[in-house]
Image 1 (cartoon, one colour):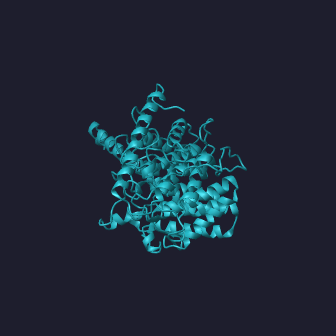
Image 2 (image 1 turned 60 degrees about the vertical axis):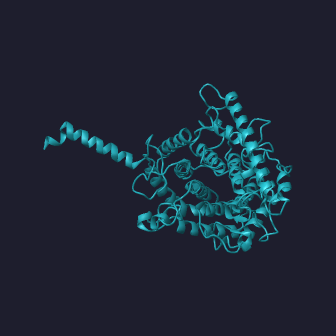
Image 3 (image 1 turned 90 degrees about the horizontal axis):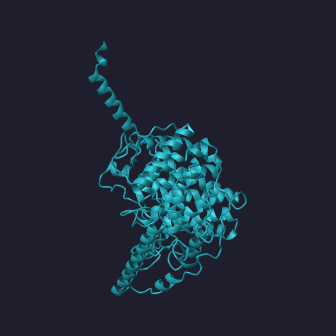
Length: 483
């Protein structure tokens, strides 16, 4: 009976325990705030140390490395601002502020020279979301004369509503792209229009300005006239050649999420029962589609990016998630969490699913080289080998969001209850460059494309040189950039 305790068997038993611990991933007690904060800290550290290089010599402040697009960095900073608010961890605040301000651009509108000529309306919206999150969660205001969070979001709103709302095609709506020489110019997608809807709703609640209420209603109502948003199903988008009636029916969690959050903000601000009905209609569709009831995918308790996670497993002919899609759960889980604050009668529907999802996500954070690299398929029995900033921030978002309930985290503020960020209702009005470019409605010529390429390369080179100078000039001895 004592042979079990031989040195060989003890070594084997310890090896099995260590392996089992690695498979289990992060230690997370979803009912213990201390455990949640420790798990979230581990994930956040991994996100920044492994995937963000903007503090390194020669790198550009604020963006993620190739192949990750500019918009995803905006999503990441918004995720980290929420993490800081939920956990009380201010370790990254200076880093976040540096990044957010480095990408504002010369017109203070999140159209920086290194991105402008390839930037879409949805890309710009995600940086505006991060700025709004900073304003709503009382993230430290930048010192004067730096641009302020609220004014940055207002600049994006003003540009999208005054320059880009297109009534000549489909009766309204934003195009996907800002410039007519980019692929996707003729496509009107939900995330661009849903982004404007959510911006309008959040600005309405924060500022109490009726103009933003009117625009939120306008965008929501227009979407309802198209095939892009039908019976609370938020589809990808439609081409103007189809009059926006025949949509691509892929459903992505951040599309449903952006409509849900916008509706929640509108209900919280207006108290209008129609927004309450819309919140619950969207929530029912979201829970049904993105929490599949098949036992292989979590028995309805674990969130998935259904159209590229579940469908790829069901039939490999369906493509796996690309780099963009692997980050969508980061935003949709954030928006589910804030909905519980803005519309309290959704808590019993949402919070149990976020708890089981967070537990599953933490179990997937077991990859090398650190042992805390998170992967994508939360319903999988072990680490699935996919990893990247999208997977890392998705786990961070759903884990840290649990603190809303356990720590009774206050909801986003407004100007009436603690909001200090300064606005500028006229921000963004002076940028007419895009109007001049898009005034050429004829076919795009070779010379047009060559000119666009030259401008993009020129600005990219100029901004890279500026970034190099800033990194050399604005980096202190421990490698962290400072304001």
